[in-house]
Image (cartoon, rainbow, N blue to C red; front, side, top):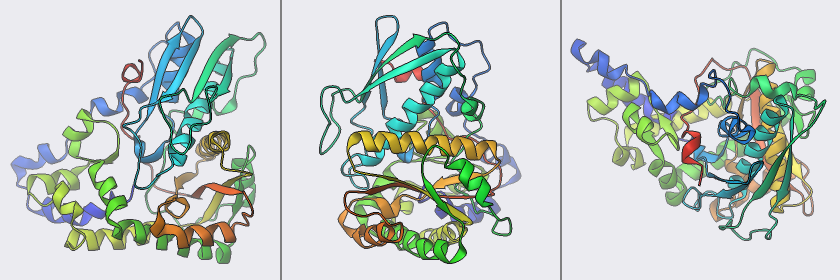
Length: 375
């Protein structure tokens, strides 16, 4: 997330150097990386597989998709964490990863309801994993056929949902009634320019800290999938593709080593681009929980994905801005200020903060196919 726009400067330079014969190569896009988004084929007979093929499209930190699924009997499953898919530098207590399990479980529940099934969920039955997630199940779920079950209206938004990281149109105001609708299932909002600006300053400060702190930034660089080949080979992490990226690869102007160099011209250009992106904040929503237990984090994920799906239905873009909510030492200042501005006191925890507005249309993020999550 931090670095996609960062590499565009190098890409522009590379594009100008490409000969006519190289156009086909630089315009190639990932192919298999997007296949899980195509759900037009008849659904599987097993309701669990149908629910989970939708659930793997849920938003999650750095798009690492840490979900492991073990089918149990004919109607149940255990969901656990792929411990290699965590973010020790930026998410040292696996809080954001746990929120990603909340988005996964809620998306599965929504999909199950479309087929007339309820999804009964038991969280952390073997203990509340602390201070980090471990091999114990995050959730045990059971699918129960329910006569007259009410379908969830958010189902239609699962496949068009996106996390839109582009510049938003500040000339188009997001109305309070839209924000109220987005946060019906939890959360608060503001489109007040003065309040949004105070928060934006802390958000940008936290981004600068992440960019200039070696461990968090290197963690992002290590997770970059650069160009169509890497995205198809490993459809997770931070995806970088498109003509400018491919041009930079062909001309040798974009590679992992250069992206890691904070003294490079591409880094400086990208840093300014990030300021432009994060400066385009028409409105904000946030989700606060009464505590910071694993169940609170799961609930934050449930609320967040429902907000994202509802925003999709309303034609609005949404983008998590989580840097100021992270728990590594260097970002403690913005963390405190954001919690203060949002009125979180005592044990309350701001779990999610996201901008909302009108952005350009974008495509989906790469995804691993469902069978890679089954154990």
